Image (cartoon, rainbow, N blue to C red; front, side, top):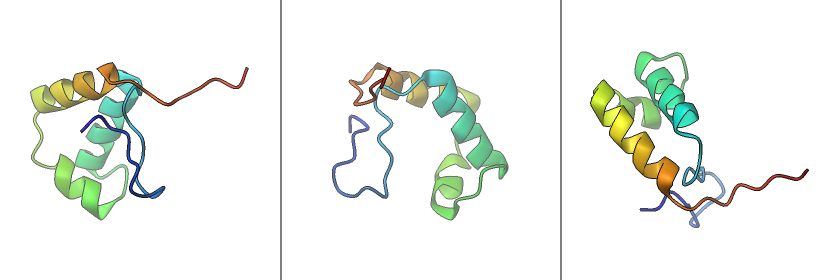
Length: 69
């Protein structure tokens, strides 16, 4: 729910990720520019407003991203 996948390293941790990055990824899955059958199917029905809402939500979640420098 918060975008922090603990189940498997195969699933990305998207909570706290930059909104513009998430939006581009979803648009690319939707258009087919980024290939993944599962994500493509999930992104296909999303409207521009849906993408804006989803990415805003996950961008506001606590993240586990850290800078090494």
